[in-house]
Image 1 (cartoon, helix red, strand yellow):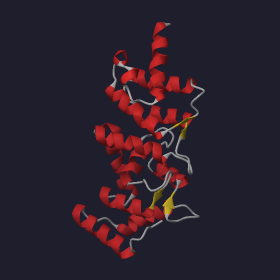
Image 2: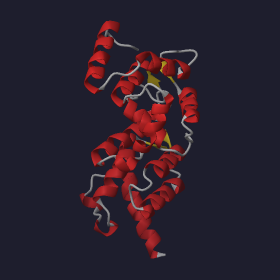
Image 3: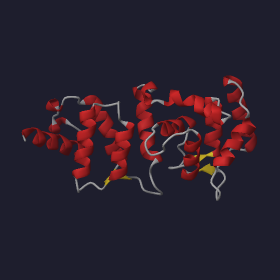
Image 4: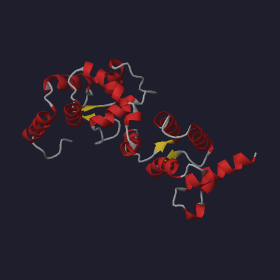
Length: 222
């Protein structure tokens, strides 16, 4: 999983990064990785290791979005639900992390309010990809709703978030959500703040969005 790059080439890249942004204690960062790494595959940190990191940082992995922001900033993207040693070490160089104390000191900067719209869009896509299981390219609907409630809180109007989650939960025809549906919901929230201006015939949104608008129209009639 390390690709074709040689060990010396990777060390050279890290040395270059550290010279640009300030050196870290690489042995200390590697020791943190080793403590968190999977027992069967010590080249990756999987969910158990991420849970251990959360304990060290006093984060609730079920509700604190900062752990997802941290993993995104570290550069986890090779495979879902894990971070490789290469990603972790590169991320430690970029973020100047070589102790748990420095990880803790970074926590205030992991608030999603510090992300601009383009950064948040990238992070939002990462949240879907990271939570995929195995070879599945879709997410279970219940997981998606929980993620929306955690990730989009304070980023879109409360009413839109609540009603869309409510709508999704009640639709028996949707048991899993695609990446297109996931990303389109955020774009829809930015581009269509007023549902009265929504024109289904002129839109290219997924059917899920069309059905949500119809759901809201019926809801408002009652």
